Length: 315
Image 1: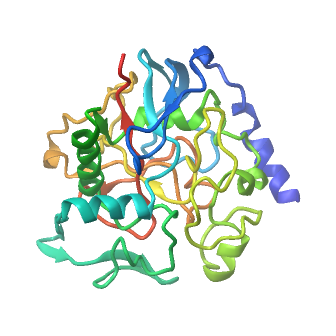
Image 2: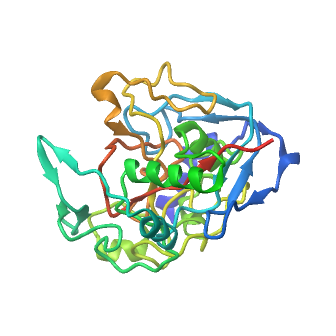
């Protein structure tokens, strides 16, 4: 308890919101087809994104605190894309994934952590990430390219423009008006009410990994929407699976857009790296915050990495 109290005191100054959004537009949801993701309309408005230098667990290269303003409402999936939803896409399209390469060598399968080290396992894939999954768990072992192909499939299927959300859209939607490290506030002990993260159950299997001082009851992924939603009615914006965003990875975020558009004019390596956000079932306190970001190749696949889609609102 003493350790947790110290953590809360360290991050308590960041709980103030300083955000505004048009709450009159909520709630609105829609589904464009049977089996399509349920979409939530996210209202236009402003919120502070990024992290203070003093924020607990702040990583090198995180965006400095800055005001983001979304001038037009958009929609984002209420949950991560599930295994069942992705299976429908694969069955209908017979889609073939790109092969990832590292130093000129193909990476076959999906990246996996055995408790000691990471490495690609050839027979692991979205149907077998190395642990049991149900059809309503978030699909993992999918690349940004796979997520983009799924979004394009929805576009062609429904006539509405679907896409992988930008990093600003994702963080704006995740915060839901909050300005704290997590949308629920500052207390790590509250995490297990809202997110499937690295908890005490996880720590028993992976004792060398950082974990939250609470128990959510799941070591790996679990059913989407099982935990409490944020104020926008979105589930698993923290935890369960890391989620791809559309932005090319940028080392320097000084000139990064804050209007919700994707930053895809990266001339270095032709945007071969993208920017996952949100943390997953394997993430502890520092790797699950709203401001945190990762850096992974566009064709990279991991047993902790999935996605959700965003969509344009028809007027």
